[in-house]
Image (cartoon, rainbow, N blue to C red; front, side, top):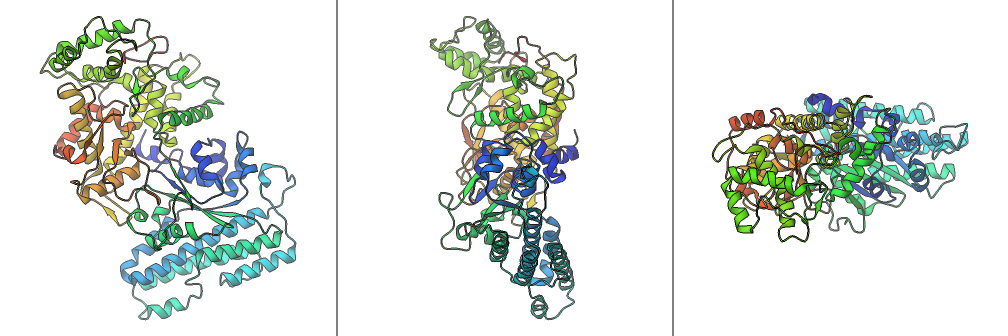
Length: 636
């Protein structure tokens, strides 16, 4: 899997509405986001923001077949207007900023943005007025009719509101005039950027639509439309995609409107977790609040169980029409993960029910105690005796033994055959196979999950035995992780102008991953080695910006909810872990654990040579251990 294919595959922006809708899986996040209220959708790249917005548009709701679609079409009493992130106009005007000055830049940027939104609004109106033979069909969702004379009056009214000169009184003419306006704004920005006009203010004054207010312009137009079709109580929603690429003052304007917005016009805005909107205060003394004015939906899962439920729905949607896998449950295909995944509260999940579990635990514990004196000393202090391990709940150390079992497995996999000697660093295959591990590594990110599933399913034919072999699962899960790592290697160290760092993103991640690996495997045995970090006050602004870019890529996951308005502002005091998708790259378990201050980690520098060598070691071949009865890989 190449970097390009990983980025391009399953990207909703490159797909038709029919393609997006045919494979769409509604999650609890979608239900929360979709309701009749203002919403902010926060998530890293590939987390599904574009898909959710497009599905709420008129085109998306009409294209959505079967399943839960009828329920949503009945419940959602609004017209969704999808406004894509038109990066082209943003970059074009931004490139002229130095030449035309900040004031003129803001004026032209706002005019271009408003023109884009008005064009999307006209497109939604046109779709509403399409005629259908079967009005009960989903393709006629929210369709209305209008008399010819009323349509003419409506178009004339809107053209006056928006300062447009029309050749004919049609919606198509409105659309064409807005396209011409967009081109004129680009042309004027280009001319002003070249310094062809000595009097910029007079030049801007020659454009009568300059200063046209976005919200009121849309609100009056949709009110006119609803009066014309006899639905004066109609509700419309502006669906802003990738809004973090818009100039900061436009973000400020829209986010401020979450409080001032009228019930007729609602806003649903998709944002990166760290963008200009998180660094600048809103231009209002009474900013909107998540409790009263909008709902904030985060596309990551603090609850592992909720994430796994969504992943199962995605799995079933991908296998529904597969001749080999249709009707199979995820654990039938992947087996159970081969060791316990421990949640933040310490509760264990996915314990493998082996018939002779104590004997097999004893084998692993004995092997490590013979090569690791610190582990042997730990067992002595705890009063844990090998080979007669009792892992039952009633045993004095039963819970402790089960808790440390994954750590024992990792140390056995990566430590030498005797104290002081290195072991060949092959990948710990069983740590990254089984359904719970695959689902956890995806982080509930549909693009990551589909990337892993597609590669694995390509190996399934009529002769395949279930559960699928550990090597097949491990290869594609690890390939997806390494493809993601390679994307992070080349990630830009600047985003949105305001966020820039001198620290390469992957270098910081490797420094963190190395620290955790050393605590887990190399240093003296600890029952609960740190696998998360807390951003403390000693961390520099440069590192904070590096972390912000990592968050936007989904490379690190925050334990806390985002700030009130659209993401993470101050990162200090917040706790993070590395994305589980990177676990194979850094030889770490899919496991939550206690935190350590980031400044402590940064006291242990890592060289570029170490990063290169570490990558080669981590991507080496996998250790293959077969299991039976659905148990994948090693013991734990």
